[in-house]
Image (tube, rainbow, N blue to C red; front, side):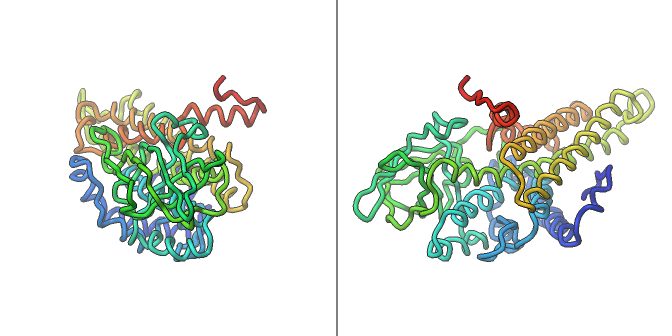
Length: 387
């Protein structure tokens, strides 16, 4: 599976799954790594990679039509692992484009909408976004204030969204709003639609390689045929988040492994008191903890995607993997930064960048605490939200 494979998980993968992973790994090594530090410093995404990732089949690769790769959910996870090994922003781009925008149109759109928008999104020739979160409604999307009012053969969208990846450059925006009867629906807002504007959020110390935007819809008119006909209720956008969370559960393993490998190499080379610091008990304890927790996360993620392939995975089980693996990865990054000492705060090493990125990944797609409540409701039968 990777250079850290303590339990020989490689043996549990098919040849096609290994090939998908290796293709993503080569892409990262040959085309991405040289871009990471300058783009992180500049706070920008290397946008030439967007169509390239489409060519390689990285967007919603578990789907089997409209040009999608048609690989297993496990292969999808392995691809996300390799992308996030480079940077969480790279995996986030693939998640927003694939598991959110493409997934929404694929699941809830008409055949005509499929033909109109999916090929360009799958190929990466067009950029997509998924606008659900609002300023006052993050963990409680059901309280959204965005409205879509029917006006003849158009809908008029009014409201705002916040923390939306790719919104400022998106050609196809999947926007969630309440209609005239208060039912949540999905609406496609195309590039340059009148009444839409977006502004990138500045000053981020985390996910600096991701474009993250605030969006405003000021009497934004879209044709009535831009409504997704099969999306009715909040369960529609939440189902897309489940696919993205599966990718996150795998993706953070890649960045955690990078933190571990960086710390291990540094500990073997760095000498204090006449010997490598890897020979000290407290350093070994940190490295062993990382090995242990990454291995557990790998097994958890693999079991999750095998259940996804069988159609048996439940939402709360996806929450458990997202909650566990992101928390694990953040702790790995903190321990690795500690091993690197003063050197750990510079971008000469990847650890501090991963650590800052994980602070965002811990929050988006459901915070750690929200996933706790989802699992708690599942195991007790009692809803503690708002309690």
